[in-house]
Every structure is written in structure tokens, then in C-alpha cells.
Image 1 (cartoon, rainbow, N blue to C red):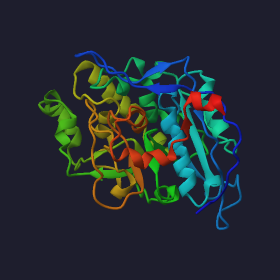
Image 2 (tube, rainbow, N blue to C red; image 1 turned 135 degrees about the vertical axis):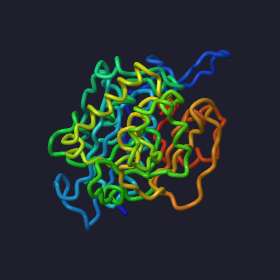
Image 3 (cartoon, rainbow, N blue to C red; image 1 turned 120 degrees about the vertical axis):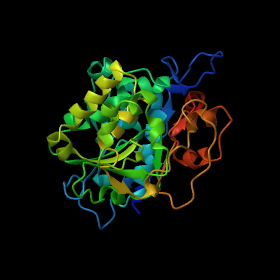
Image 4 (cartoon, rainbow, N blue to C red; image 1 turned 180 degrees about the horizontal axis):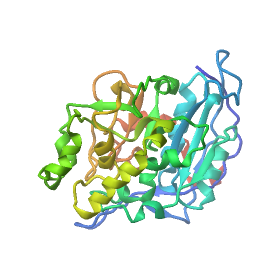
Length: 347
């Protein structure tokens, strides 16, 4: 486990308060932004490499982790980064890559103030690249351009990044991330936990399955569901195989003929399902946010856990703030670095 020293410097009031609003019947409402309500985060401990780790800055042993950076999910991103650093033996060997859609300095400033010893890489993701390709899904949050940024990782990251772990902002890692990093991809371009017991047909419409030309895409494969919120990607193979273009082609089909309902996930499944490297399920205890419509509480799946994932509508920080948390949300709470603006002003 990494050694940690705490430096309790004053926190900077920078970022944005996340809120959820209950809408009128029949109106779809998700997280909204309140620019006038700044968020404050405690400064995290400075985690250092253990004796067995390479020197800081050494390319040897480097673990590249990519996430999106969005003010609406900043509180989750902070918790995810904190959890990764806390549970790895070599925290100074983790390189963070953030994709941001807005020219908004507050989230990045908040990251740097909370983790002053990190040197994160930030890349501008142009929303116009996907805006014309996005089809309306079952939940507004799934329609945001930044939700599609994972498709363009290989086009965005520098050439020296040949492998990357992509993580959603609603996860906490409770194991050494180097174990996930070291998975043997063999000839595959993506590795992720695979769920072959799930009803795969529900991820696509009747219009898809009734079209023999479209459904033939799975011929010769045994497609299984996997969640794109936790992936290990061979960036070099993704580039060489033209996978960005292949995913975009299915998004174009979706614009002409509605073949799915769930945002950025189905085109990934169309291209990769049945052709990924399966990873132990412990690396994505997903669905803790409930379904995409109501976000009702769910229990943990049996078995060991290395990563907890609040995929679905319910986010732990919103449920905790509303004083209506699910039991699993208390597993996220220890990694929450947020403190209310009122409390920060009193200190």
C-alpha cells in the first residue's frame, strides 16, 4: 500500500454544486448546473510510491487512466481519482488523462487544488464531432456529447500512450489499479468484464433484429453484454483497426433507422461484443445506480469486489445529499472529498 502524508491546506472554492431536481410528471429531468453555487473540496493526502515502484516520472510501470471532466460529475471524478491513488502501491506512476468538452477552467482548477501533487493531462473534446451523430436515448444524461468521448480516445491521446484504462466518473476503485492494467489483451483491442447471462437482445430494437442484414453483424460471434464505463483499451490496435470509424458507422445507421435506445453503449456492442478479452467481474460491480429511468436501490452482487460502479440514473452524491441514500452509497461516501460551500466559508 502506498505511503501517504496529509497536508491540510485551505481548500479552494472552485467547481460546481451538483443538484438533482424532481420534475413534473411526464417531463424528463436530470442533473442541472448552477453556476452561482461553487463547490469546495478538501485537499487529498499526497500519496507516494512504495519502495518496489519505479521513480516518479519514469515511463516504466506507468499506468494511463482516462476519464471525462465535467462539472456536473466533478464530485464523482474527485472520488474516483482519490480511490485509485489510495489503493495502488504506486500512485505516482498513475498518469491521469482528462477529456473536457467545455473551455471551463473551474473543474481542472479544482482537480489541481485537491490533488496539488498530480500533473494531469487535459484534452479538449470538440462536441461538434458527435453532435450530429447522437440520437435521443432513454435518459438525457446519456445524450451529452462528452458521453461519446470514449469513442475518440485513440484519436485524442498522444502517440506514446499505447494502452489506457477508461473509467466513468461514477466509480470507486478499491483494489490496486495495476492489476486491471496488467490484463493480457492477447489479440483483442478491448478488455472488460463480460456478462453473458444478460439478455443481449434487449439492447437493440425489433427493427434491428428483424433486419437480416443488420443482425448479421453478430454472425460468427457469441455476443455478450459489457459495460463501457470500465475498459482496458489497446490504443495502438484501436487506431490501426479503424475502430472509431466503425463505431461511427453504426451511429449513422441509428440516425436512419432506430436500432437501439441507450446512448454510446450499443454501437460499442455492435462492433466489439463477442470479441473482447473478458476480465473478472470483480472489476465492474455495476448497476449500483439502478436502472436508467428510476434509479432505484440495488444490492451488491455476490463475490469479491475491486471496483464499484454507480451506472444507472442514481448517483451516490445526489442520493446522500437528498438524505435518501441507498445502502451501497455508504461505500462511496469515504472517498467523497466534497464539503458544502457554507462549511468552507465558516473555516
